[in-house]
Image 1 (cartoon, rainbow, N blue to C red):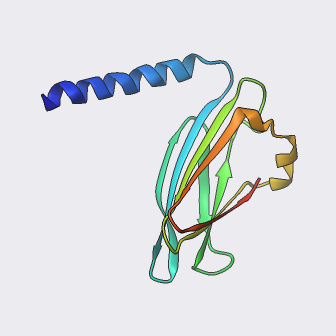
Image 2: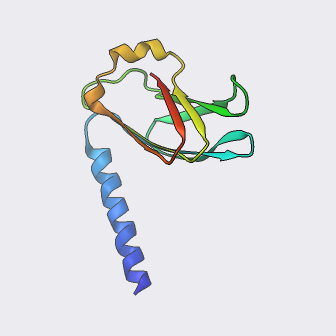
Image 3: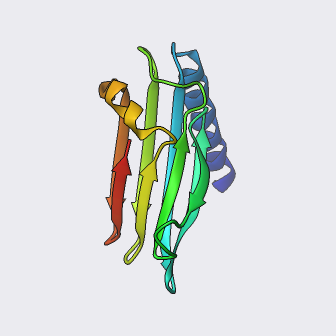
Length: 128
């Protein structure tokens, strides 16, 4: 029984990947999870589909705040692009998301991009 349900789950995932690849424009998804461990916030989960990536996790404000630099290597966002960021910040975690050029955010067509936050008591800041 477990084999059949696993096969169906894999087939469903493959069908979704084929559907996403067939859409016009860039399709990208980034799933991030931040956790507090001692005095430090860590980027504990980082999964991606497409060109949306985390370049690096930095600590310019000290170990309590993790700053993740998000990259979309193709550059700006155009019609047909779909960018999705899913973010979880566990209790006590403090995450900041930014891009190398956050001032370019004013040019983003936000209906084509989405960001979900499931904050389980953590703090998140956005700078794009």
